[in-house]
Length: 279
Ligand SMILES: NC(=O)c1ccc[n+]([C@@H]2O[C@H](COP(=O)([O-])OP(=O)(O)OC[C@H]3O[C@@H](n4cnc5c(N)ncnc54)[C@H](OP(=O)(O)O)[C@@H]3O)[C@@H](O)[C@H]2O)c1
Image 1 (tube, helix red, strand yellow):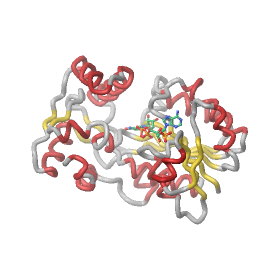
Image 2 (cartoon, helix red, strand yellow):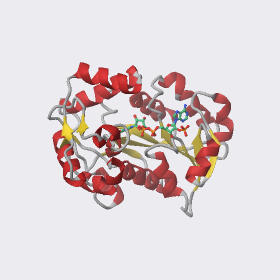
Image 3 (cartoon, rainbow, N blue to C red):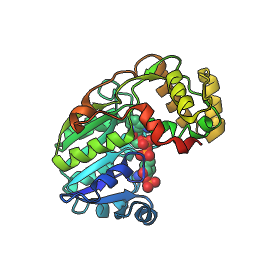
Image 4 (cartoon, rainbow, N blue to C red):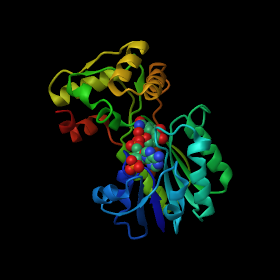
């Protein structure tokens, strides 16, 4: 089976490539806008691919049986930016798509993932929807600097989040791709934590104070915009943390355990594994 991994240099995709690289039953190709750098980094076959550049589709989908579909976070106009590539994949003979979706996509038509799921469901493809909760890795990437500086500034109040380790999501994707598991799954960690609890775990493991500041929404928007200069991204982050504040991100499921036959990674273990990131 030939598998194309989109988002192969990203949070989940890179672990999926790792999981498939030596699989005897799958040949993996990593898709990237910069296939040369990706080959050096991932040590596997790569191909140039850009969702927004149709001239890259033919080579990327040639001989491909199965696809890990990762929507780049910056591409929200699904009909314009994602569907043309998916149509090309179907035309090229791809039969199976494992889509990295987001928890709640089945109940919230406003998220781009819902529109992608709906297109795929109507396409005749064999599909798996992996509806993932909020990645633990957001704390070791997006929020790394501020945690290093001793604080975490997100407007989530006392709301809890069922953080999932992206490596567990990748392990599920690998299993789905190798074994042709179809269906829709809600992937969460083993429990839901408030950001005060997150900071308590960080403080205890890093052996120094990490303060949860819980800023107001306007204050959060202004500071994220100052930091990254991207108002749309700041808006998406504000929406995600508001969902948590309202208590809508706390649902815990058993899907990781039932698909992997082991419990999902606990947040404390994640922090222990990654402690050098924040020191
Ligand atoms: N972060 C979370 O907590 C979370 C939770 C649930 C679901 N999700 C969903 O998971 C998906 C991935 O999110 P992420 O934050 O983990 O991002 P990510 O996968 O780390 O995103 C970056 C990836 O997108 C690729 N990419 C960017 N623009 C591209 C383009 N025009 N064409 C092709 N590839 C492109 C990049 O590849 P190159 O630079 O190599 O081209 C890179 O591999 C998103 O749809 C997100 O909504 C995220």
